[in-house]
Image (cartoon, rainbow, N blue to C red; front, side, top):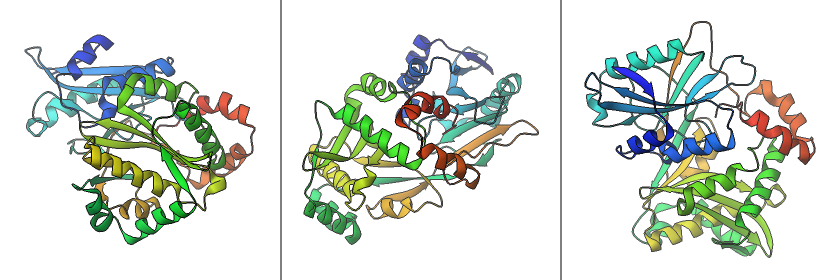
Length: 348
């Protein structure tokens, strides 16, 4: 078994010959990262057997985490999960066909750790870890079934409360991307988290076209919440959910989700909804469960060189509390100019 790095054109062709589980395994995701953050080093790995046939593919991005001089290799950053793409049935793949050749590549690299985020597969020969789970919901056949049988009374109450406040939802607005960006900046500033480059979301929408959708929630004419959804193979993935903290007494997220579910069921565009990653100890699990979502594991697999540990750069980490508090009080121009320099060094 031998690993080689593929050029972008060949990678796109090879990916087209596999069935990938996640939109983040789509070759356009690497192209998005490459275009917005050209200084990041990407590896489009293909493992070939003695006959020259491709056995598996793995997208990797080098992220030099805050406080680290050496990079991590991640599959893939800035999305929920990535992982290995297989040409054939992965259950027939031996440890020698995956872990050994990948281990050789890793050992020869400058990276101190390699992280693979897998939604399904159980990889052998890797150290398992991670702080996240995921939630998925299979949509019923009718809106009435969804309302009566799938979601909980708490969800129904929240939707009715949003209605009383006059929340209305729109799907296709001329300024939807601009509105989303404004809400995202305000939301991130309040929570003390750095944002991507200003070009990140416009480039994402440009690359994924109709597979990307933005939904805006308003009270009267004021935008107070938004969702960004990505579509892949009959599944809608919740990529981002943001709200105006000044209106946190209004359950705009519940209204946005309910209107989306109504439309998805009636149109048949999506039969499955992926709520994205959630920390295993997060209160957000309750929010997702009340919509009838089922908790599933999200597997994180590692190769780590001796003497190193994987950094936990998460908002819940107490060591980061002073930095988060400071960041919340910095002016918006600092968030826009410095934020992307920090964001690109957070391996999430």
